[in-house]
Image (cartoon, rainbow, N blue to C red; front, side, top):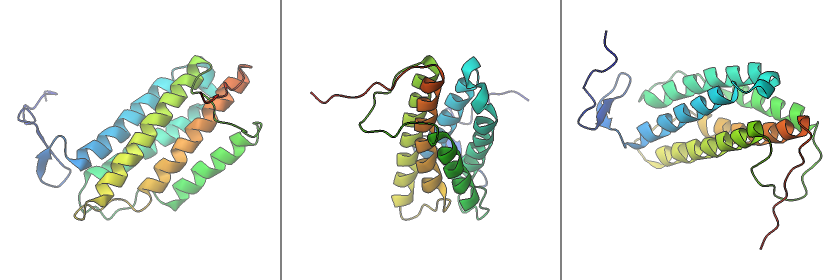
Length: 179
């Protein structure tokens, strides 16, 4: 079987078990951005200093595939991402945040290459969240019930992991000083 089908050459793609839609459809934007986030997490896992996060990030990558499948399947009633996934992300945040000094200001998204890449993933996660919110706003679009909450918590986790990555390499947070 060839990788190319030529069925998308006119700017449309098929949804799982559903109709063909334009490639700029809100549903495609939502799960496409989740897929982009997943790729960023795959990149992060290649960093040698990311090894302590590998099991967590691998699990999240699988969950993002599940979320993408939910978003790509109109009318899907199977909840692959449940409240237990949100709770697991919160537990990871709490575990890692307990190792950090409390923030007293905004910090710039920088530091080690690992931390900076985690910040990029965080911003892609926030964009995925916005795309899912936009999809949910369309009256005919049903979304997984925990999708927005899951992505919101995941963005928080990626921020905390970036700070942890800097701390482990003895790089201080770089505070933002308003002009």
